[in-house]
Image (cartoon, rainbow over all chains, first blue to last red; front, side):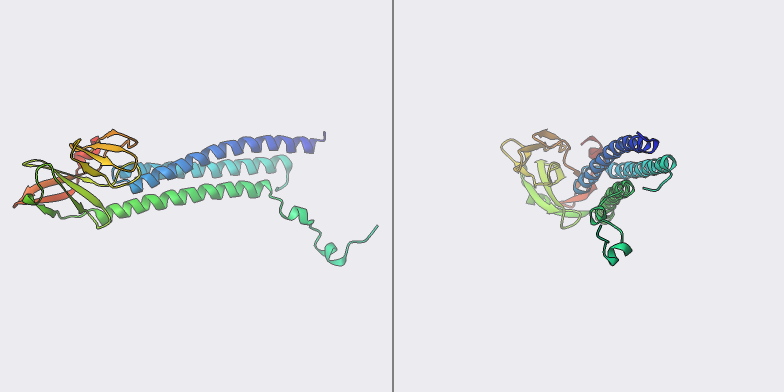
Length: 83
Length: 169
């Protein structure tokens, strides 16, 4: 196996790990969205719940973009190419 | 060997690779999905905030004459906007309570069941206490939003959400 292919395989493994984390964060964001929808429809739910959901969603979004940047930068460093 | 046609030499992109999604594109798609969730969450929270600001009246309103509602009876009204159905209950001679009429499960309108002295949601058999709106049975997990009610000049007045009850519901 050539070093290039080995690097590609390694990057695929890293990609799968990153994807798993991103998928988990996306699911959490979906849940946060439903929480906010519930808060909007239901007067019994405090405004603080909606605000907290927005903050958490913001953090999740930032985390996802950071992970993506990390992955793409690592990939570029390892392979020396922009895929 | 057959020479590819002239236009194929100018555009050497195989059609099979035309729909190939690169890792970069895929991760960008995931990032944009996350952004879409964030925007949706912000928009929904913003709408709740707007509803709250638009619906928070600075003045109280009279919703019924005292004699209009018998003891053990009820009256439906809308507060703070015409899109917000509420229910006023007279529990005793001098005791009135009012709640948001929308069930906290799936927003079906609750009604007063005099036989069991509870507020009942007919959609999924949810029951609430008439004292403080707390859920007693069925799928609802949260209590009904209670409104602050007083009597003055032979009228029943509503003053907005009952903040004390909101914390306990």
